Image 1 (cartoon, rainbow over the protein chains, first blue to last red):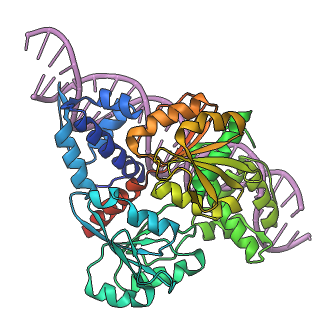
Image 2: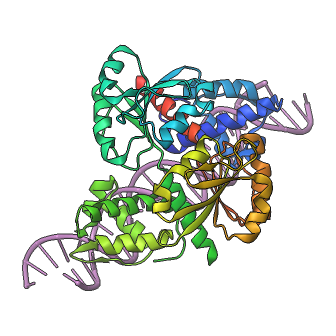
Image 3: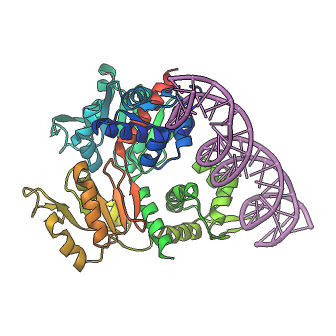
Length: 209
Length: 209
DNA sequence: TAGATTGTTAATCGATTAACAATC
DNA sequence: TAGATTGTTAATCGATTAACAATC
């Protein structure tokens, strides 16, 4: 248990969490690695291995308590905490993130949106004020922020990222199609949407033959 | 060369394509596996292996022609073709996809948006008409569509997906946080945004220690 | 107790890295 | 030619699967 967790396992964790929440909502109390595997299209063996990275949550002859396992994985992911976010860029993506209510519903709260466009500054998106990006440093000095959502035009991305890191941001959810150069203590998750379309295109082509 | 291409390689292809386009834009004509590896943070060995899944595009003692390799990988991805898309759901995500100009700029054209909300039907997003989802079947009968972008509320997702598949859609770009049950000839790429935030949260927590 | 199912070790499989002959 | 760098085979590493004793 515990110790090193491989990237492969980390990428599967949110899937476990989602399926366990669904099962809980369906009123399922208990599930075996076999049953969960069928549902998630993973082998029972892999599920037991994955879960045992974090400790023995199961009982022999019984399986796993859905609620208990869901709670544990939630804690492991850290979604039992509130995360305070700022959004950089009030364009299509920034708006979509700001307007979603699934993120705040899961504890990911957006405090502010920053943009350079005078036409946007001072407006609100949902109930969130769009601020002048020039005031970013001041804002970060006063407010504790956990995550920055980067959704600015590509040419500005690196500069804004540098600014964020200089002001204590260590986690970036990056929607810009670029590989940011970041200090080693910074955590980044890239969402490169166009790559998804390209992979879809590739797989469609592959199926032709 | 050719033959089976592993998922691991497929996932890296869009990265190659993007970096090669950047290099081309920077005016770089030639690059070695070594040089490309440094840029993409991959080993030179891996780059040569990956590229050789598709054929010998390099020259010993020289490296790869940036333009030639970019063109080849573009063809391999299928982004030299136009892809016709429809968007299901005119909410935050559907809007963001419809309003982006990077997708049409890369040949991914949105023909129509479908929604069930009478308040949205008949309006336009960007220059794209929002249609009644009841008219989806008729539309698909008349228009060739390559890709469906699924961005409806989770409870409707499976039903809409079934409808799409019944009407000849074989590629789905799925933004709904659910594992869709789809016929085996259907290709799906999932974009589970909330999973990215959860992974970010996990990694932040991990760094604490 | 008997049956089921975990936790964990061992075996297999696949992906990455290293090495090097071929060749530009 | 000499130097550089590919294409490709072999070695290593890591992740997945299988097996099974432990135990609820």
